[in-house]
Length: 142
Image 1 (cartoon, rainbow, N blue to C red):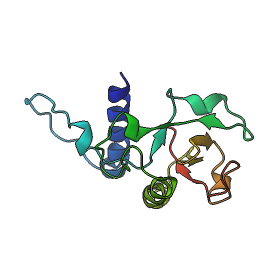
Image 2: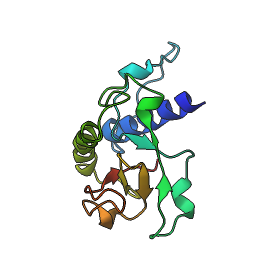
Image 3: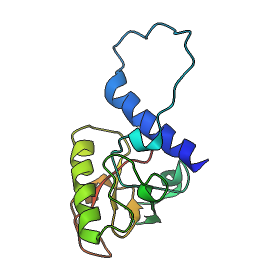
Image 4: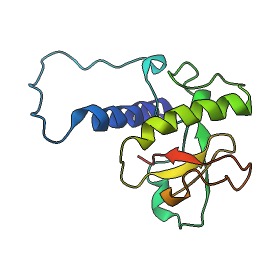
């Protein structure tokens, strides 16, 4: 079930990035849909939350625990290896955050990929993590 969630999360990001609203719909294909192995999916962040819509019940001061994606998709493109140092994890998260920051996504928040916590307030982007002091990175809830 978690793999399906990760796949759907990645696909929604790809759809947003490459789909666009003004493009004509692609013609229907008779071929059966194909799925990518988890190792072939690129990610735009290192962590996720346990459930979809976890952000809907949070207040600006609330923090929620996140789960590292590399635990369930250890060969995912852009993800650090399981057991990577905190500095390696943060460096990988920074690269993905820069990509995510270049795209205005409504309702994005912030997170720390080292402490595995997230918050709904994007205004906290690049402010110190309340646990480790590293600058917070951009986090997508969808």
